[in-house]
Length: 289
Image (cartoon, rainbow, N blue to C red):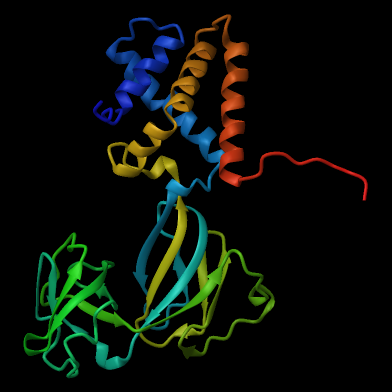
């Protein structure tokens, strides 16, 4: 038997409306439910299990000389860690060209063996393709050209400034205690060694004295996901029953269905089970010690 096709938002919403009492939903019903009930279910899922494994994501950025603060990625919900990306000055420069899966370094790039760069990562810190972070799979010293994987989303060109990363260190990690928030921040320029979180940004210590890379790890906000994208479609597939039940319950609530309270209890139980799966905690009991 063939693997079922991925569900679409329209299919999920339509089925939820039918179970909620709108037996033959109109196009307007489907649009309204997508704009309202579906988004409410997103908020419910985010409330009870914002750290679903499927919501893990990474993003990269670059520091600016003299700029101490850096904002979270726009789609971030819960930050996990912040990693500094660094490399020697000779591994920094402006590319001379680029293609779908390659980049040609500056002609002043140091002489290295063809295998010496394999497995290292390259970050475009400014210019065409800014923010892209790729693994170097091969290198041709004669043409100073590296092949990367995966392919570029935006091909670099002779405006692309790059950093070949040879060293990393954690500036902030949600799982580790930190005293930095109680320390006076120095305005001294230097290589950042740690960071403090405040609201939706990090403050770096020291103030960057050159351009460094930053690698954010975080859990994405479901409401910021492309509903036709891979992550959201996978969530529709994996949590199909939760989506449909949630939309059905919210439809019943809107139209004052007699089944509302009963089906609400079912929906809340589904969310409880989802929370348990996310936290990997099944039951807690008190006992005498």
